[in-house]
Length: 408
Image (tube, rainbow, N blue to C red):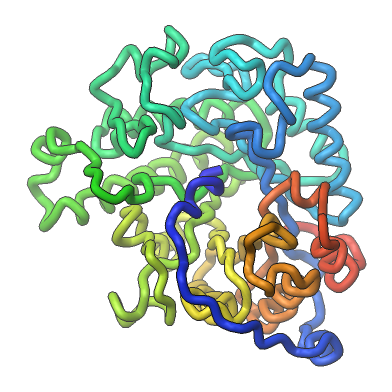
């Protein structure tokens, strides 16, 4: 999902989990409000969550999709964040971009039905919100333009494309690219009554050692007013966020706009306003995404930082990051939800904290002490369904005994 390769860097140092006994944790839990975000990401890139494989008959794809929605409703979740533009493609009949290859196995081939239209209708029928999740600039998880559909905009406009790290990206520094991706995404907003538009953590790509994102020509043309290439790149992403927010308000007033960034804006060692972390990636410096400013200026309606680490992790402690994000959101109109790494629970190779089915429930208990935290989103749907060590079941038993509406 954006959420797949964003974990490409390695966080080295581990520390022990300082876990409070369950009784103490329960005593510290603040009363639940009537409205809170209880979301799940439903990723389609590389068939991560859905469909289970490309090329399934339409009826089978539809049945799998509805099964995910029904599971969310049974678990008393209230929001599904559905990835509908994973790689400059579409899970609806877009006039701008080809059908996604993750549906049929061939980019541009119609699956014979409308997944996004169906998802909106069936989610609403089950009392769920449907947030349409878009990846703005990723074109392909390979570097061969010849593998794209013949009608693909990236083949018609090769000057828009930057190969980097074995993948293809649109160049965020070109105004015509920004205008195109905005039009392509807003087409879905105009067609369907989605409850929100959602971006993940991909803006400029995650850094790849020894490689340079080749945007010299665009910088020469458009970067003259900026103190550095980094400042120009950040302005490009800021413009996308502001222009997308304005477009959503114009096309479908009342539809919200949320972003789920990597969890560390900057380390305090880099910037005194940053978090007490030692993360190898900082969104401000490496992805050119000033996520703190978006919250403080209320350019977005909600933020879901991906806090995919355990309590007590020395490099990026979940507890310290919840506190930092709560401070950032305090006094703003931007809602704060926390992105939770359900996919780590019970997974091979994960630290011992993630082998404990109570770790995730402790996250919600801890976060509830911060009034700015208005809910959580879990990565991702396949892991909600499988729940190998019962971590999600424990969250539901401890925190989701009753249904709740999402915040508005």
